[in-house]
Image (cartoon, rainbow, N blue to C red; front, top):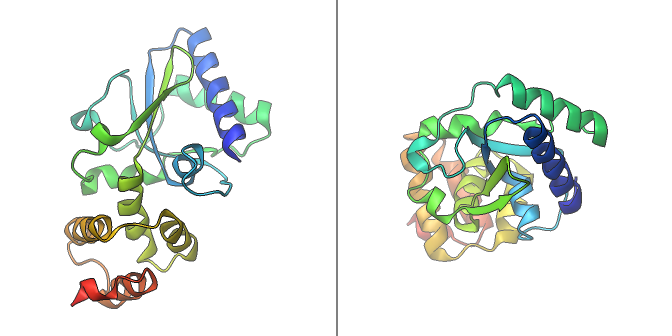
Length: 194
């Protein structure tokens, strides 16, 4: 999906939710969809990565919980949108929601960029600053796509230092220092490892 297709699918989802008189839904979105919609990285994506789901129009960070499963009414609407737009059944992907229980960067919701898709759906796209954090987290596993996204974001030294500290705190040493070193050197920030 490109930017238009992402926003068209979310608009259709918002219309379906409004028509069904469902409670207002808020999605916190990260990954490629956030990069694309905010025009930070020009590329396409197969899905919209949902970090969290809330039945509140104005969630704050304390409202965010890991999303094991979408509510049935939302799953039905997502399925209808998939059928209408020829998207895969997992076009709205809750896989990244596990990050919520690991601990999100402080202030993530205060920095998020809100877009409303009708009266029943709000999407909070994580900020560029937080994307740097998440992309560094993903890149240390050796993912070339995440590393390329990170390079295109052109993080400042301050941003990459903050992201590195968050990754180290979040993973509690659950990664190989050599992997972090490889990513940092690829980004031109090898000197921050000293």
